[in-house]
Image (cartoon, rainbow, N blue to C red; front, side, top):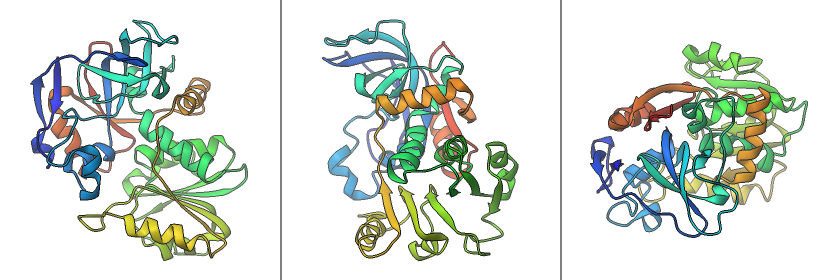
Length: 326
């Protein structure tokens, strides 16, 4: 099968198309014929092997799994033992281990039937970004109807889901993005938009019950200044920091400080689970949530797709077209 593989850590230039053996599903696994795969910041972090503290997990000298990609949608090709809920031919989406390939393995607890009213490429945009937004707002922030929510990075993969999810839950949403994306973020349901190129979130007197920081590039004191006295900050990922530990210092400060202040200062490392995918499926099929695809690239152009994600401030998610079913 054809796959996008990487032998050494580095830039998108280290990604290459190669023919490799098709994997076989073990107990509790499915083999999925991949039709489309999502491209997000998570791919870039594994690709570069930065911060260095992640390498014991993903591989010390090079990626342990040379095939990139996590998000995916396609059809079940084969099932391993003890897989009662899926059969060959089923349309599915979720966390695929190495989705930048014609075939990828998935664990049953991290995959779900594809929403019937979206394409495979739209479905591939959902798993990591949609689940991250859902877990941030509901599991972490405990979002309630009527609350005021600030979504930083509102036009991106996670942000575009977060705006829609908060609106669907009855919250009032303000989005932060570049001016060129303001109309797009309003179309997602935001009542107002802050252009980060012209104004800072601390300009004015607005305070928010929940701040979801999907950009990860603002200092903690500035984020706290826009919270209500008992507000909640959920910080997803985080860019920058040291080569060894990345943004771990900020996450540790948040964990320590939240013990002594009224604010809840929370980090999030999302894990795609079937229960969350089923929740998202229900919202998508009801029309309350629409996966947004910024652009599509063929599998062979995966390096260009990753570069676009890195520098292009995409509106929604960048997606690779892999198989014939899209």
